Image (cartoon, rainbow, N blue to C red; front, side, top):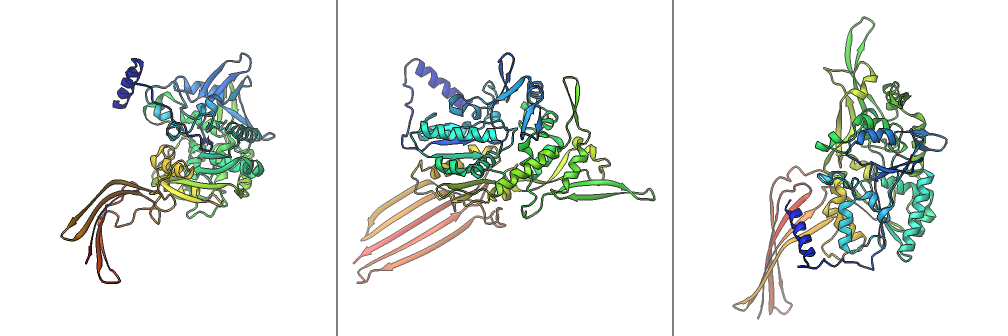
Length: 535
């Protein structure tokens, strides 16, 4: 609230001409950047084909559920690989305002209270503008219909046109791509299918929190129960999990996010069900059944075999779509053969330190599942692994590409793209700064927070004392905190040196205090003193 009041006062002062509007900073030497969002990360407008009327259907808060079902529910057409609206009189488009940035900035521009819950790339856009980037010259966005396949030909053609237009607008400079989440799969598909165009226009690609091997727990739950993209009080005004569920069942992109069955997981993602069974004697027992990603398909089929929705008075069956699964398997095959062109550099940022759904379990010993068709109405439990809360670290790291660097950042899936440490990493890789304290590969952020130095001459001795404090952000070797990380560590070291002619000598002593690591950050204090003398 204090920040809002401060902004209000600044606006009044500028209106009264008491202060001047701050000069916009533009760095003409920066290479252009294209931001690519993930699933649900683009504004979608519904266009009435008869009247031409346009209205935003994703994201909206007021009357959201009705408009969502009416305008966005769709069916997959295996002959084209495209999902099309149930309403034949409605088409979906992504707004191109602000050179594509409008669609991926604030997903509901009309929302005033709690608007941060629908921010997408907003914080990153604001940050990059402060570095000297300029909309339409060096900063662009690529919004797209995220219901569609990541390799849909129509999307690939739009992406190619976007790269060409940015190249032209920036005066022939090569482009840096920053993708988030599923946007990384879209970029990787394009790189695999159009490597020549990718190499021609792209300089660097930075993937953030990309589900390169899928998001098994999250997608299993989404296919069986739906998902909520907004949490808290706003959820009451938003789209229900059931409505979202019916959309996701017909979205190619969701099937392409399923856990890769061919990947060698450290712990294979499972679908587990506590089931009640009866033997020939009529006696019942409860057993825990586990299904691998391939075996789970038969469970999805049975669980969703009677799934139906009513649309315009007509009952429409929406079972688990095997045609979509075939399409997604082909997409995974394409992704597996992708290679980074020789002239392009690839970087990978992945999230850590958050419990992330990996295996999904339904029922328990006291309340087993007697009928698989109950699953869409049963609350699931998760067996979690390390990750960003949506994508397991193991999946995000396994890009299968030649990477210049892979960096783990403690952060959740959505919050990671507005994390200040991620900004520091990106700024460094884009060469938008010259920070000598920066090492994104090892301890990816070393921030000096305090620095004091004193020098004086005392009784023929030169004395120098130094005090520094650092904040180090890094991942542990095993991705977790060490067992003794809760203890403060103190170490010291002394060195001395005598000149060759024995006329000079120097001695130095340093003490280092390493405080316990918390949320991926560690505070370090250094106190040092050196004494030198000359005969």
